[in-house]
Image 1: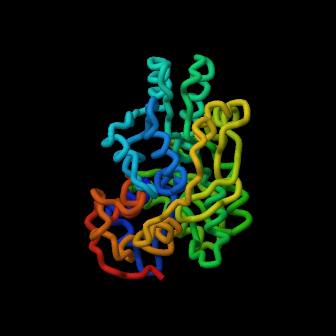
Image 2: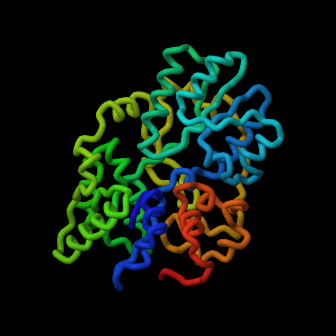
Image 3: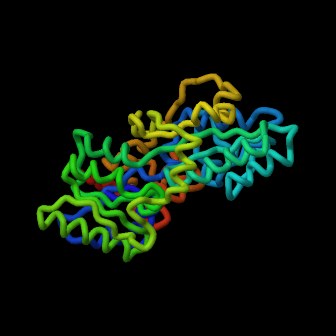
Amino acid sequence: MEVCGGQTHTLVRQGIDEVLPAGLRMIHGPGCPVCVTPLETIDQAVAIAGRPGVIFTSYGDMLRVPGSRGDLLGVKARGGDVRVVYSPRDAVAIARAHPEREVVFFAVGFETTAPANAMAVLAAHEAGAANFSVLASHVRVPPAITAILDAPDNQVQGVLAAGHVCAVMGLAEYEPLVAKYRVPMVVTGFEPLDLLEGILMVVRQLEEGRAELENQYVRAVRRGGNKAAQQAISTVFEIDSHHWRGVGTIPDSGLRLAPRFARFDAARRFAVPAGAPTENTACRAGEILRGTALPTDCAAYATDCTPRTPLGAPMVSAEGTCAAFYAAGRPAHRVSIS
């Protein structure tokens, strides 16, 4: 299993998954933070963005992720002030420029984006930007891998770990997983040659009866990771259980704002009533994110569900598996991976 959606796109775009020898199959993991953002959080974002006096900021992918009652792009079309930013610090700058407005940043991502979002909260704290807040939906990779390997229908015999996450967090969190599950794990980059070498390293371990943590992405990943980034995360956030869309609640898999920075929590500030989220019954995103189905197993793929008319987040995000298959022109045949 490659965990990261960026790796999935490389594998599918280059056709690597289609030319692997018999007996070797890639299982596409839940490594798309946009895709696993809980439906109820999307609904919160839509509700907050539609309020008068709010400037809602986000990365572009999040605008098109469908919630129970529409998406952020629809709020913008109806006159809501929804803006795409390239950095959370841009949102802080908007808040300082408009002290009369509430400015919210949709803070989504794995450990890779958490440091920048933490720095934005620290910047708002230092600047006294009381009108800035974040709607946070951060997830952590190691607990997700644990949930996958613990699943009764698990078929994963080797893992390609996400290089960018390990560049931030280092390797220490992955060593206990290898020791407990006896599953080879290779920290891998994102270029075709990175992935081919990572696959080869996993296969060699399996053939030799080894289960070790190896680092293919040596040009970017160090054992200790990025200490400054880790410090920013631990200062602003604390570990919490988190619900993954299509997967379920995974213990210790999320990050929430620490009590010291709770005043920057948009969910608390706006107190959006918790409605009953409603998933589209035609979408098989949950199975696809868990690696138990392929996009081409879904009857809606490339018919009712396309990048222009997505039924679920995996067809929206630049890292979504369905979007990767669609962009690569994979036909809508119905071949099960089981």
